[in-house]
Image (cartoon, rainbow, N blue to C red; front, side):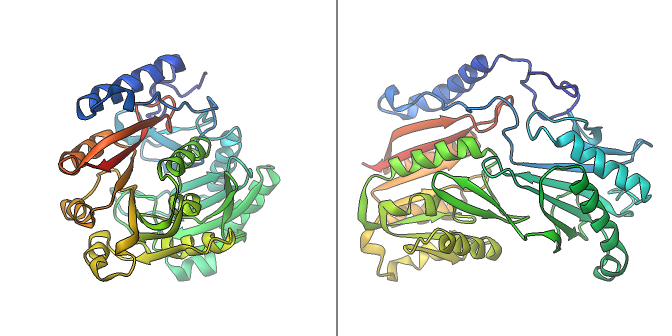
Amino acid sequence: MNCKHFGICGGCSHLDIPYGDQLRTKQKLVHDSFHFLCDNSNVIRQIAPCPVDAYYRNKMEFVFDDESGAFALGLHQKARYNKIVDIKECSAFSENTGKILDTARQWAMDNRIPIFSIKKQTGILRYLVLRETKKTKQLMCNLIVSVSPYVFEYEFKKLALNLAERLKKANVSLACMTVGLSNSKSDVALADQNYLIYGNDSIDEKIGKLTYKIFPYTFFQTNSYVCEELYNTLRELSGHSEETTAFDLFCGSGGIALYVSKVFEKIIGIELNPKSIENAALNANLNSIKNCEFVCDRVENYLSKFDFSKFKVKLSTVIIDPPRAGLQKKSVQAVIDLNPSSIIYVSCKPESILNDLQNLLQYYKITFVQPFDMFPHTPHLEIAVKLVHK
């Protein structure tokens, strides 16, 4: 696969390596990391490849920049987080990437909208965050800017609507456009307030037979194709425990909980972000799933209260999909104290899961290790590990 930005952009660093060799390298990494923790090397399965070799990502965060004196809208340069590559195409995201970015670039220059400077803390344009669902082919644009709500309502909103009109004319299947207002002094693609200016407030993605609504700040697996393979595997690992209860820790918008819900009598998802909990409940209702409950709380706080729950006697499985950094020590101990018969741990960072396993393996043994190539042409991967009580 070719990309005119390869070697300069910090994205697909392994694009020049044959895909089979990439998979073998990742498989070796998993084997070398986990074989000494397993009773049997057959526990470690072959890495599940990505079924497509291009345009697999469903989300990208493109940065507005003019620090070098020239206007740019793109991605960070390799090993240079203060330099932005002006992106004209992206083989990881979408065939329409160039068309979308060219439209936004021309719109910003035509209207002479100042770029936000982290150094000076001045300017307006910060990020253009794009999501494109792979099964339903819907595009969401989230423009992140630094303006006050007043300036947005009476000045900037008209400019943003003009961008939406230009994107529609560019024929890129725009389904949703929002504007996020950010006061952050840091370089992050997040907003304090978000306003819908065009289309629906969300886009829909299909994973298996389920439909998931995705909002501007919803967490969703980056690769929809491999996500389905991951979720199918998690459902198989959950077994058939229709009379038992499961936990889905760090459940986000309910992706895993809803997909494996038929396996259990009850599944409880715990997540600190209230917007994610609202999203999870909405997705449950959308798919007519009645046996999922979603709780807004810190994982360790909720688990400490579970001794008094009526579901304690039926708890069989704990599913964990934490942030990249892994679990806090309190959370690891809280899971151990629950004493579930099995734990299913999902991670996009093997180092984090290996660190957490040091404590869990005092009481549990690994019975299944499945890597997934969620991030082709990069050194990163996703991994699912099943542990059962000794």
